[in-house]
Length: 118
Image (cartoon, rainbow, N blue to C red; front, side, top):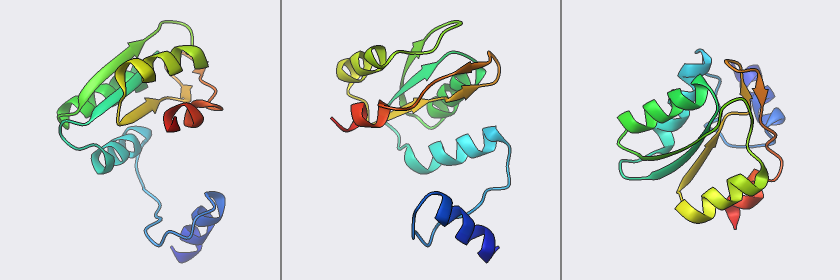
């Protein structure tokens, strides 16, 4: 396990001692992230264009987050759409599915981090 931990730390360029591998499905990993970050009342903006974004919204609702869904069908989101939604809602968290396997859509992530830090 120490070798796996070191490998993960290298890949993500971190020295965080709490780095760990999670033996779970994609749903389990997503639930782990949301359960460890989202507090009741936190506003989370979720961009969804398939079941994975919808599942994230369901999990966030069960955790008593204030969920704002931006939904599209058969298309991903432009940086302008993401920026406008972030400015309008001022969320604590932004959730974006990069590879939506239920629809086959791919959401480029480049530029989203910069938008959320403004």
